[in-house]
Amino acid sequence: MSDALTALEGPADHFPTTPRDLSHVTFYFDLTPEDGEDRAFFFVKIETPDRVDDDLDHWYQAALDQIIARNPELEDASFTGAALKYGRDEEFFRLDGNAFDHDTAPTGRLVQGSQYKNYEGGVTYSYDELF
Image (cartoon, rainbow, N blue to C red; front, side, top):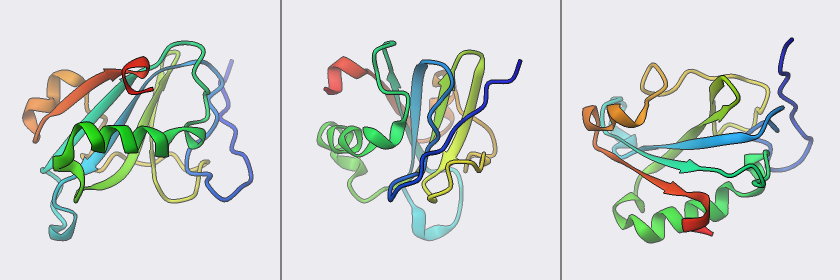
């Protein structure tokens, strides 16, 4: 059985609606977007309860606002996209307006919490902490 992602038509369609509840979302921030290298990244993982809307397009901007408020060092960083974890699947999507396009993470692979130390760091929040 395949879990098909669906994309909605609309002005902010960067991320698909996942076929299963999101378990977490990891936001990728490039701290040095102007230099073209891919080592200076910071990650923000948001653990999501089942009741959370499974279309990140509906709440990513509010999440970014809360993340920046708590991590002012990210104010000049570039939000490049997010990895969506649902069921057994986890996929990265760039902030490029194409919710059907599964992208390669800018780090070359998906980054897990234990790997944040290999970059500039990261934090984890529960959805309820941010909202």
